[in-house]
Image (cartoon, rainbow, N blue to C red; front, side):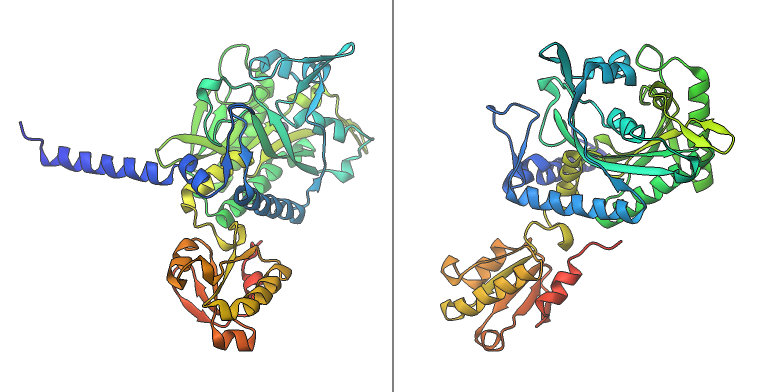
Length: 416
Ligand SMILES: [Zn+2]
């Protein structure tokens, strides 16, 4: 039997997609590019970041921090663990315990690695009396959270036990909730554009059956209504999925896919009437006392999953603003060594992440190939050495002449 032409085509496209999957798998690329690694002595699901990965991560973290600041967020820091009573109060203990690490006994108390940042932020809100006029109060934190995943499902940066989460909570009056959800979606869309990410789809994640979800139909109806209103207003194409909501409320999940077609959630916005009730959050109003709504939102999700996705999307050729090395200085021969050293110092002083590849590391062509992922390649020949400049070659091969390092540094900043 001969395979039909359609079969052959299908086979070929399957082989191609497999190849792409292997080519851009973040686990392979991540090791090759020096992004991250793991060690059995630390444990599975607990990757550590190598210098290139730490540089990408810091660039992304700084960008999101600044984006949030420009959108009216105040940043806080809170501890990565709390007393068991905190999670009993928040509802995690009743609805989420199986994903949490077991408590640690210290003296007469029990502490738990936190499964989310929400309870700490509810306490930040409660740290002093609040008045209606100061709402919406937007607070954000890049903080650690922990999930007791089984070792069988762990891998690379996508399934980990320790997550650095970009989290934020907006405490607002009920009538402000819809506009705050919409603002959070604006923020997410702006960040995705800057990061070069395309969402696969928007998902409205609803409650399912069973004890994993708070049993309060009125609460779910109210929070779903807010999310549906915003999605309709924005004309979002959205698919509903039962059983994917948070235990305390529905979510808008922004889904991404990896090169193998597997889908995961990156960004999320949630409306929560439950935790404000549990923590008895209040604000003083002209006609008495009000109960705020919590809008939970994560612009980029966990930094581990995000960087895994960025590695796969960009194949290691990161946009200049997040590239681990933004500029490489390439003296043509040993004679330009001193000029190249001076240029490298100017690059570093201008704020660029830069390194040099001296002439003893091989021919100019070989050194350019070895640094093909670096956005700016600064070649220093005799003429450039005399003038103190460089002949700038872009990653895609374009020659742009002598561009001052300050101009390159300005170009290599994220846009807001
Ligand atoms: Zn939250």
